[in-house]
Image 1 (cartoon, helix red, strand yellow):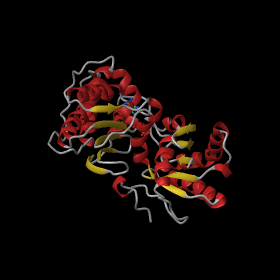
Image 2: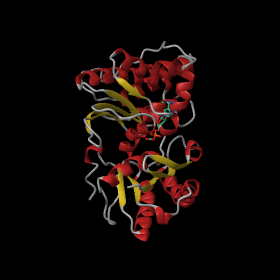
Image 3: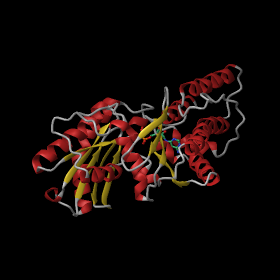
Image 4: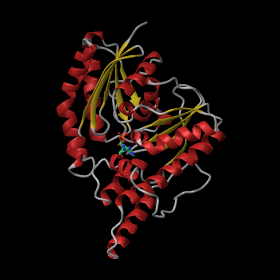
Length: 338
Ligand code: KG4
């Protein structure tokens, strides 16, 4: 039977609403706060919550208008329950609860990273078993999926997320927030001349990025003290290679170990041109299919939440009205929400 799902996403600095009818995306509205947070060099949680509260009504209204759908026609309200910033998540959750209560339609709790993985469904068909490389400002995880909605984490960062590391290194180099974008751009003009040791160069699928960030900071300061300023483009290239090569090499090993049919990239850092290029080459070498998401679904959006929401609707995964958000929700626990 045909169904319409309205999804809301407010986990970080994008207020978003999307409407999906079966597998067809009818609208996908994103209001980004990046310009406001850029002034502070990072996301300010209090400001994020306030801006979500200001914008959420408009974003929902616009998504309904663009989809030419009325709230009476919606069959279920999907909502990002976590992970993310607690105050930001609450704004979306309260909006979704209100709609669910008023229109007497199920409330569907969606895991943000499951959304990022399933964003790939908009451009290709997921094939199992698959390896999802989840890389964003808040997460760095390798996830193995044997089938739909079956997530097993085989490795993760022990400290900073890779996107967070890009952002912090950019700040040290005097580049704007979010740092991944200017580092990616400048690295194209630079050479890998600075030696940065590869952290956690071991057989696990875990990562560590705080040491790499410290190494960059120390090198920059050493050059400053010697009155020999660092070459920004060369540092961007040296840093980016070190940060990304680690992911690519571990992904190659994980894909072989788990005999995966497909690799998918997910999250904000999957927009990185070097990561995309290296992963496509590596997948080709080991003869594994790969999906790299288009730019529009690398960043946060509600279309991906609607995609997962629609699958959960079919499985009757509905939440009670007293559900709370969970800023640290594990993807493996996506069915546990009480
Ligand atoms: O998934 P996302 O939109 O939200 C968070 O989880 O925060 O990811 C944002 C992250 C930021 O750290 C940003 O610097 C990074 O993705 N990013 C990139 C690129 N574009 C965005 N990192 C590396 N290369 C890029 N081209």
